[in-house]
View: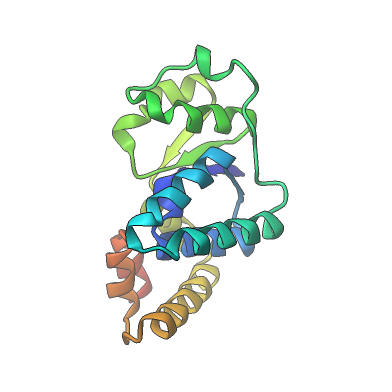
Length: 181
């Protein structure tokens, strides 16, 4: 299954690492575009002067880790598409160009299911998507989550619990499932 990741699920970090960890373990094939990566790099500027450089480094590493993930919409494709927020048309165009099965996004209102269905695409909420993977292969997702949590603890100095970390990352149902609650 090929799924395009919208910028809003690539940044923040924990959500991105959960999604990409599941992809690395064979759960699905991620897709993105240069413009989506540019949105990510520009969004992190508010953190501080080094954040954009760090994001661009991570972007380069993702290009190596997932060499087939970068897609470029065909010229003129965006012109035939419509979404409630015209700033998101490039995401839909990239999904179409990459022959994606769906888009993982937090922006449900900007990606109406009917419009996506007309293009053969589904809309996937990251929490529901990852929870579905957890139901299908709990060990795979638990292993990814454990690695993400260990890195979050190392970087932040905070003794995170899975449930708290996933809740902060806007993955509350996954966090609840992972914590056994």
